[in-house]
Image 1 (cartoon, one colour):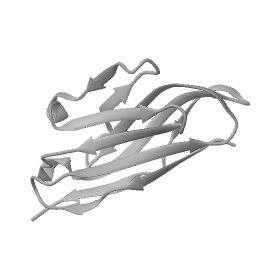
Image 2 (cartoon, helix red, strand yellow; image 1 turned 90 degrees about the vertical axis):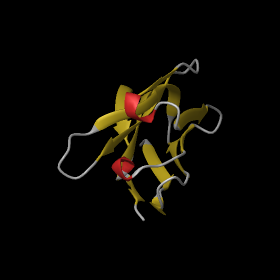
Image 3 (spheres, rainbow, N blue to C red; image 1 turned 135 degrees about the horizontal axis):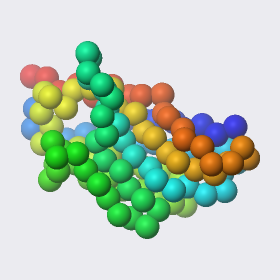
Image 4 (cartoon, rainbow, N blue to C red; image 1 turned 180 degrees about the vertical axis):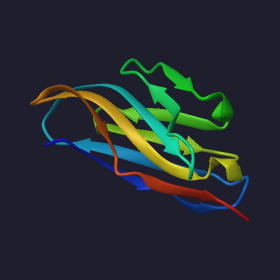
Length: 119
């Protein structure tokens, strides 16, 4: 059984920084694309950033230059460092991982972690 456990998140003031992480556990034979999505109240879930197994990254325009996604393949963990946070970054952040487990290739989601940016 594969699980994704997120940590980090919380309440910060505008302009501050915050990091979130997501660790995969269970019987995993390979991890491919890892990413972070977010969903604000009343809005659709949107891609924030993604990183391939080779380290290529992709960012939403709204976070380019402020957020950095990274991964540690040995630890099966993906990170999102968020700098210069804005109130509009407030949302529940979900990690998403494409991997091969005992059931074959599948897409997994973390439980979500709240990030609130407010003065």
